[in-house]
Length: 136
Image 1 (cartoon, rainbow, N blue to C red):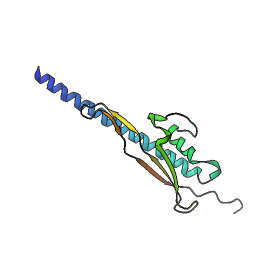
Image 2: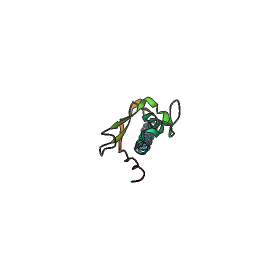
Image 3: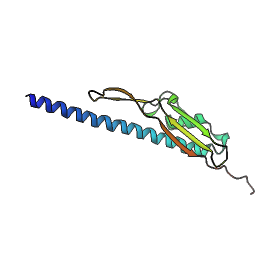
């Protein structure tokens, strides 16, 4: 009976730790995908500033749409996403930078159970050059 209790507790710790690792990896990769999607959107729409704002890019990361309210997918809040534009506008170093930080996830494994902060995710993408003037 004692052997069964020791074996079962070890089995449960291993099973829960595999679940926690898988979920944290899934959450991180989902946020990386959303940051890349927002940076791609920003790289194209920022080439014509009249069509896009950094708020639109933030909404693309959080809600997968240019509009939305409340927490987005997987509980990501808009305050966790920062969008910056670096470099000379229209120049070769013109970049959009999307940063996701301050998100948390829960684990169930005994000894590590509770809420943990995720590592910041930073995606940088060059802004596409604008359309040339017509007639040239």
